[in-house]
Image 1: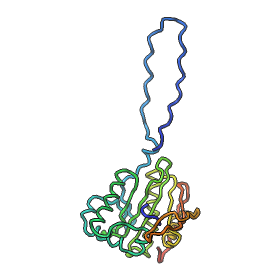
Image 2 (image 1 turned 120 degrees about the vertical axis):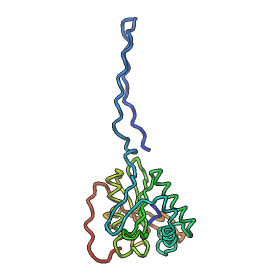
Image 3 (image 1 turned 90 degrees about the vertical axis):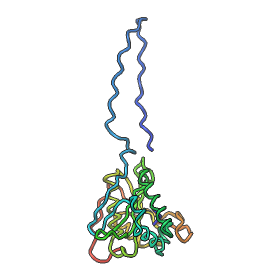
Image 4 (image 1 turned 135 degrees about the vertical axis):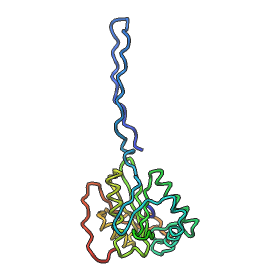
Length: 243
């Protein structure tokens, strides 16, 4: 999977010029028609990521916050993620130490403030242990086009956490941010991410050739998957081992 992951104002209606009166003495101009109040938002303004915690029962997806920068357990979890071989290959993040982890977090928080990316810490609901990260970012906000990406620490693997997280943020983005289409792109060699995409209802649409440089420094082909807001929800996950 790739690393984590304005519309123009409508033209005014033409104004028909008022013909010149035949009487050389013009009457006093009529009072201008009142301007109707603006009752709605533009499509771009409506497409806003609203900070929300998504409760999956045993797992919470919570927006990263400023306090995380001061939490050593969070910073250490990010350092561990950066050192994990699978994450380092398919979703590299620059967090070799606590200082770099804090900088990584600040970028996530700034993106939340700009409204360009919604990044969630995936944590254990019981003790707050960091399990991973899932994010949605706008590719073309005016058009409602977004992309999602995710990575999970070893403790979360085999429990369907990645699939459940991807499903949850997808529903959230469709329902609250008015996303129209959300894509997943992952390296063709990343079979785990491919399973997550399929199990999250993202249909395969083709191969992007040498489209992204991954952690090994090479450009890899990527599978492109996508879901539309009008697509049906995927079936319930079966019991047993998962992604």
